[in-house]
Length: 187
Image 1 (cartoon, helix red, strand yellow):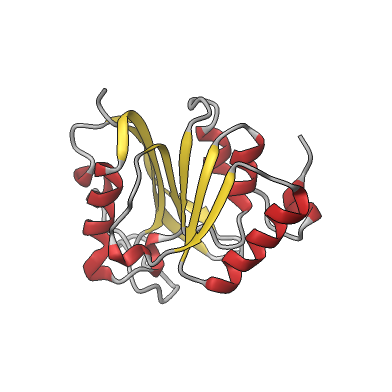
Image 2: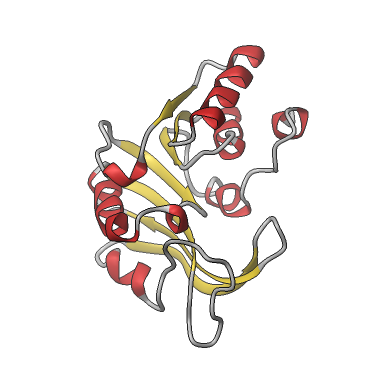
């Protein structure tokens, strides 16, 4: 597989996306908060049909340019305000890595409910979100952080393939506690 990410100066795909793809066959996928497309490019090379959304128009323009330059036919980059919680299609896989922290805190539960509603039966949601806990107070001023147990509670009834609230490192080196979940919707 060609390393399109490094060719275009992007970070590698998120490690949790790479791990999730060990369990998920190519399908229609949504990359929520795609930025410049590091995860979308990876998924497309594995054969997923990827809708890549972000509210930052410049990031979507950059991804459009990469898609055009590389002749990629299975990525559809779109400007979309995730806070709206109005997805218009259903997906077998929705990846939302280090995105929720930048949303309007009052809209996060609606966004997660919308993701769940637009996940096909037997489909998957992958979420990685920074936490703010007494043991590990969040040192980054994100608009939103998860509390202990909050993410798992919102996915009751889904099969948890992976769930942890471990320490992790952001790409800028910040050590934070993250809620990480790969869950499968009942078929």
